[in-house]
Image (cartoon, rainbow, N blue to C red; front, side, top):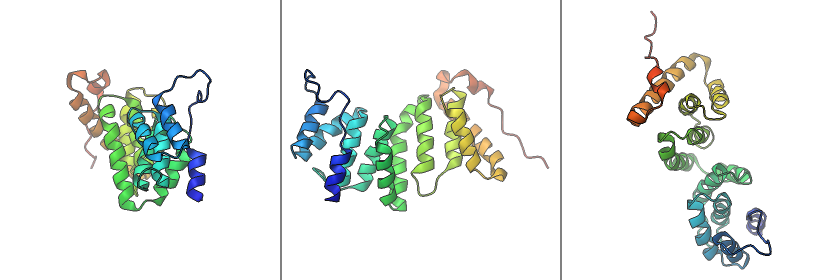
Length: 219
């Protein structure tokens, strides 16, 4: 009964659902299948839309994996799609993601973080500051051991690219690093950005030419 209640509570609909003149579309068809109890058909419909970036479809797919409706019950897979939904803008996926991640053991959490980062990496490597910040958020919240140094490195690049919210995020991560390790974290961030700039080649942005060399420690 608890899973049925979760399913009923968490399956989401777009704002326009139910409009008298709304033309049928894949989301509406998948949602109708779920309401009719054809969960396997619903899962197939939501999956295609979720892969294309539809936040509500990704959320609903996460719910189906979490409750084992139409699919084998699979918390790591459910958590992955909850992350995808959250990053695509579904606020309702935040508590679902937290619940699912809390169920996972350390190894599953690390594997989940690696999978989500692998999905985001092509965008980040291409210069998408938002994707860099999303990778940083994953590094801070999903692995068994958060990695504020690696998160700070991505946030530093995003800040250099003027990504909205990057400076604040970078400062928040820096606060998680012990004071005596912050100089090393800053050096790691510079090295990270140099590597990122080198990979961009001729497309590297202007700030790449301004990164100072690492300073030798004073004796």
